[in-house]
Length: 293
Image (cartoon, rainbow, N blue to C red; front, side, top):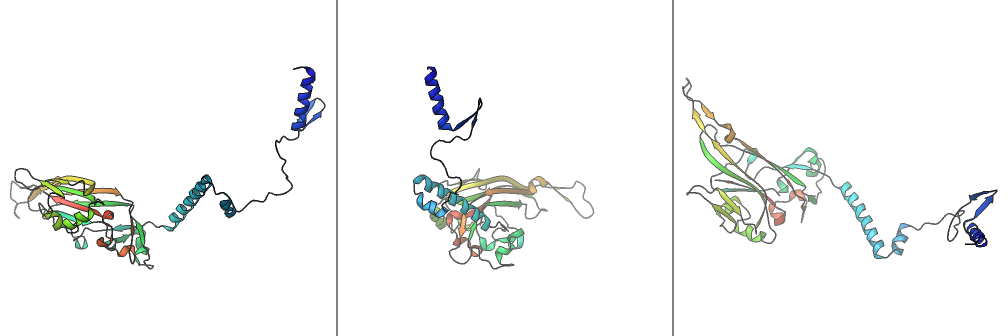
């Protein structure tokens, strides 16, 4: 580039970028390309409603839907209330326990809101202090705790194999299973044929091996253990008679299962806490099943 052309390029650069020459030093006033902006007048901003009506493209609509979804999630969290309930197994009056017969099933449904007993901060939901108006409920989790022991700790008990299950019905075959097991009752489950649950035995003994039909059940939890009461008499009989010495390892079993849930219950009429097992959908029911072999 020749000197004359270099000066022309420099002059155009100065005019475009608004340079001022002070002595031998160049100071920039401002640099802006494109249309000037009037800083003296405040720009009028459109309202959110006008913006939504004007931005009708697919990308803008997706952003608006995502924003509304976040707002609704916050509102739902603010309107919901956590509560805890206690539920005793079916047939246990006042927590006295249940006698389990060898070779039989015991089945108890957990999804019985009418039988839930409120604990901790669940009092306002049951009408104790306010009117019970809950018509929708989400089951988040269950903390199941059980204690198994011989009926009489003073009498000997040969080893019994106990199977504890937490199961759910599959949606596709739920109605057929309920019909065949008499609504998942203990007697109906015990009398059910091998199409529902397969029971096997060894050398003509009690049924100890259980297999659930995977086309009909979701097996969520399973525990297997032995309950026994091995009694030994003392070598020297005291004045009041022989004293039983019991092996407490097999005589008392404590089991705990924690299960995540997530299903929602909605009452067809009345409130959720007035619903019984028959009022809930079959695939929303959780069953605790115990078998002693």
